[in-house]
Amino acid sequence: MPFWSRRGADPRDVAWSEFAAEYEMAPAPDLAERMREYFALGQGVIAPVYSLQRPDQPQIVLFDQRRDRSGPTGSVSSLRTGVVIRSPNDYVPVSLRASARRHKVLEEIEARRAGGQRLEFDDEQFDAQVSVFARDESAARGVLTPTVRSVLARLLAAADAVSPDTLPGAVPTAGVAPQVVIGARNLMLVVEPRTPLEFEPLGQLVTDMLTLYAAFTAAPLQAGGEPGDRIA
Image 1 (cartoon, rainbow, N blue to C red):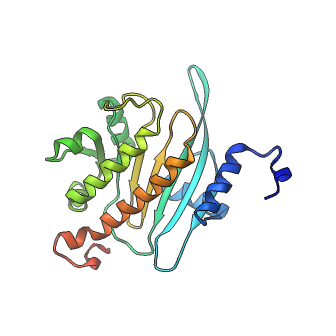
Image 2: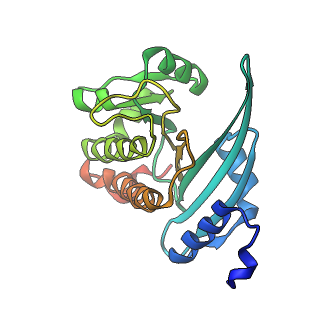
Image 3: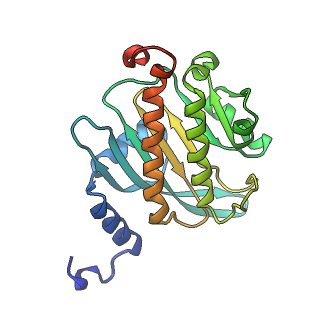
């Protein structure tokens, strides 16, 4: 792109364009409303949206969402970034949400919003780092194998580390917790730090999400079944 054509352009839009070119992703604005509807993203402009889709591989979708929220102290604007992995086949027979651990009160609010309950595991390290919310407890436990839990905990820890509010070695108590939404064919990571997510960690988060996808698709084999056993 000629230098002169960038004058007056939004720096983040330019950075998005450069990031997308490096990862061979294409603009996909037509997916914005589909992402909003499927993941219940609510109000706020979803742009830009980029996608990478190759034969026999899951589709990767990345986006920013600008949100304005009003409260007693006035309006607050925020920018959250989403990483979505979309599969052509069902591979998880349950919907659930997982987030970096926060205060118990915030977890109760999230549980009510998700219409489920927070699950506890016989895994103290995982429980200390991650909160999982699901309506179908039995099905959720069935897919959250030790390998999946390990990958999920690493992913959310990495996502939490991009927030300037996070102190090394501490469980964050403020700020919006990064969250993974898990559905039959879709995984979505949402990160909403105090300042817009940088692109260097975004590349690593995409890799971590693909690792989580691989862990979920491998889960039936670890349980002694066949790959199709988890397809509804």
